[in-house]
Length: 395
Image 1 (cartoon, rainbow, N blue to C red):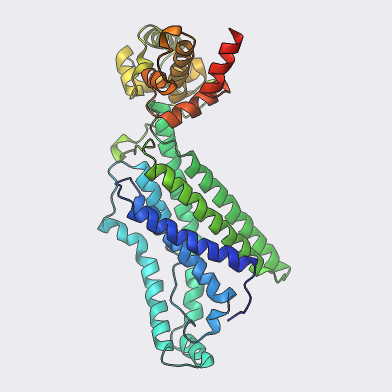
Image 2: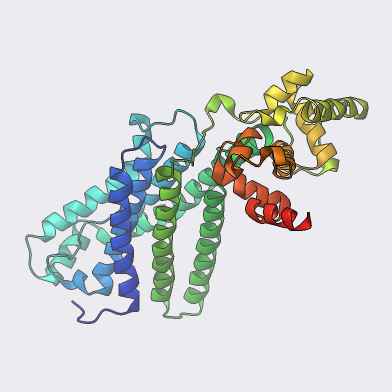
C-alpha cells in the first residue's frame, strides 16, 4: 500500500464519502418522489467506482486480500441512469421484472469477478493468483470484453436518455403551461456535457495511442475528477427535486407522447408545416388573442394546448402552428408571457398592495414559487422584487 495520499487520491476519497452519504440520505428520506431509489443507487455505484480506482492508486491491488477484488460494475451506471431518466419523463413508471434485462451484462461480469476472487483467496502468492486467473478464468479477456461493452452501452444508453429528455421537453414546451412541471434543463445539460467530455477523452486516448504517449493515467484523473463533480451535482439536484416541497416532476405517459404534427419548440415561422392555410391561421390567431386578453385563460394554472384548442374549436396542431407563426415562441412561453404581464399590472395596482408577490403570482396562473421567479426574470430581465422597486422609483 502507498504510504502517501496525493491530490488525486484525496479527490477520489472525497467522492466516495459524498456519494455514500448522499445515497443514504436520499434513499432513506420518506418520500415517494419518482426516481428516488434509482438516484440513490446511482450515487452509491459512483462511490463504488471511486473505490475501484483507489484499489490501484493506493496500491491495495497488490495486497493478497484485495487482489482481484470483485467490482465489475463498469456496465451498471449506464442502465441505471437511463432508468432514472425514464422515471423523470414517464408517467406511471415503476421498477419491475421487465427492467432486470438491463442488468444482465453486469450480473454476468460481476459473477465472473466473484468467482475469480473466491478462487484467488485459496492462494496467498500474487503470481499464482495471476496465473490461475488468466490460465483458467481468462480474466484479462473478460475484462477487455467488459470495457468494450461498457463503452458501447454508454453510447447507446446516452442516446436513449437524451432522446427521452428531448421528447419530454418537446411535449412540455409545446402543450403544457403548468409551471410546477420540471423542464429538466439540468438533465439535458448534464447529458450534453457528459457526451462532450467522453468524446474528447476518447479522441485524446486514440491520439496518445498513435503517438505512444504514456499519459493514460491522466485520462483516469480527469474522468474520476468529473465523476466526483457529478456526485455533487446529482446530490444537489436530488435534494432539489426530491426534498424541496415546491418542486414537482410531472411525467409523460406512453399514451401522451407528443404528436409529430405539433410544431417543434421555437421552430422558425418558415419551417412550420400545417394543413391550415394562411387565412385559417389568421382566424386562429385572432381567436387566441381574444380568449387570452378578454377571457384570461392564462389564469388557469393547468392550462394545456388541448384545452386552448377545444376553447376555440381548432385542432391542436393548427393552434400550435398559429402560436409559433404569430408570436414566434412555443406554447409554454406564450402563456407565461401573459401571466408575467398580468403580474406586472397587479404590482403597479394599489388595489393589490395587500397581497404578497407569491399570492399575486398564484392568482395570475403560476403554481410554483421557484418557477415564477425564474420565468419572471427570463421575461423581464429583473427579479420580481427588483422590478417592484424600480417601478416605485419611477413613480
